[in-house]
Image (cartoon, rainbow, N blue to C red; front, side, top):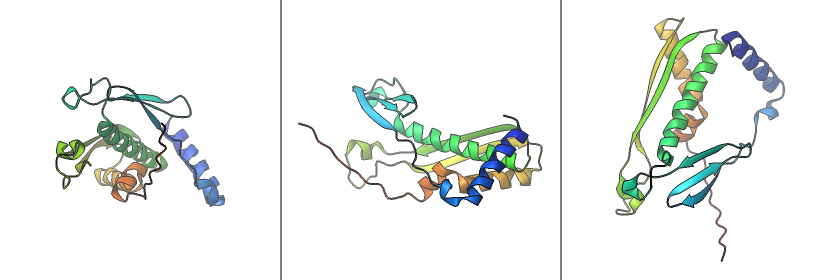
Length: 171
């Protein structure tokens, strides 16, 4: 989709939501993971979406797919890139290059339960954006900063919502 077409689509959607703010709220599509073999999981969605995750051999997996932590980094990178592209289009800026890289650190003692004081969560998440377009460097930086503040995945990681757990055990 061209920048003018994308801009027009975003303006139409923004106008509809501004006129009827209740239409902005939506229940997101669920993702369901099913253990298939070893540590491999098939994750599916309601519209035939499908991904496979696995752990590396050192963790007992076969590396038949990316590990879930990589998918989280990929979600942050792609969400941020998408919001940057949307903001640029809304401002009429043509991007010539856009690349978002997300790195993190972890401590395997957490996932293995070797030290209860060590979190299994990712730590030190770092994002790097390489961007080029037909705007001045400061305008591009402003687009990236705005997108970072409005990326749903980024916002969720910075201010996590309540997360509940329901367990249904079968005999």
